[in-house]
Image (cartoon, rainbow, N blue to C red; front, side, top):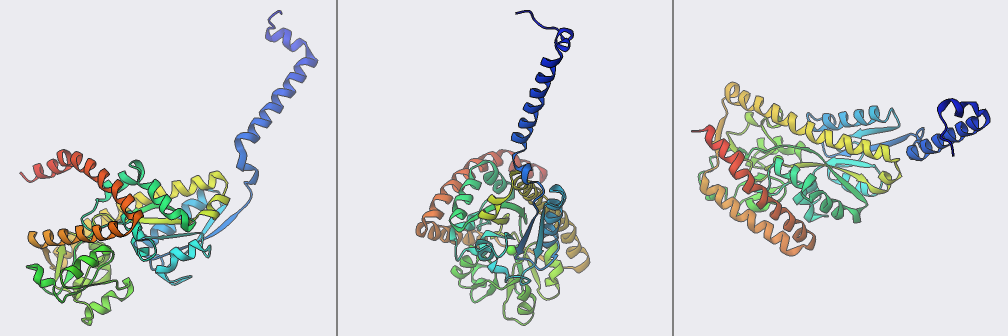
Length: 372
Ligand code: CA
């Protein structure tokens, strides 16, 4: 058969028209196939997000407000999310259940808040003397952690996303010096998660006081000590006005991951582009919250020291060593009593060993060199 050049091809008018027609048809059919969910592109979704934070709470509440704005913009208004602060739709610690049951489609909080329902989830927020922020992000994103987290939440009809991190926290505010572990005896301290078990093992009482009640309880002596987050939020709470000593480091929360939990059925109903928009928004929020905490904490630590003359103290080494011994015990108790926790901790511990060896010869050596 003679090879047709463009001219001879064009001269065969009818064939050209037919060919053109089939090219067009093929193009249309390809477009439809590629676009897939675009068939539903005009459908609008209105979601509710419940949170464990006060409405528009700095960094955290503001962060989720921004997330809702990004999602609306990226989806050109096809997915709008109404954000509710704690107690506006449901109480703070009931947001897990609200999303599970579909009262809201998503929540923002931290996995250790639901430790009563999902004890193993604590490894996806933070554990005392556990992985730091950078290690947690590496484990979740590229070390298999996220898959374990998804598997843990699947029976609850939830999909988790890492969506923020507080960075390293502070040890807390005390009304007396902590010179030895015996100073913890009889001490009533507000502290969440496994950290509270450590305080109990030291002879004190670890209490889960809700954020809104901490200041009053500390002022009235209902509690003797409290941790909260870091210099910025601690300053906003005004703890420096009523407690004498500000201790570091935050051994109990070395890099708390904040979570977005999404109702799995609602997520699966979304077209794939809107699902990807949620993924992209969560990843952006994960960075935004951490960077804002880091930037503000540096600024407010300096403010507390220079303008408010706080008494900054480091926990003595032997106190930290005892905290660590009891934290190991608390983790062992959790792992030995819960099969999910055992499986997750195996991955957590093995990843941590590997990344710690790398950090030892890099960041730790570098930090030490800065002090030479
Ligand atoms: Ca805290």
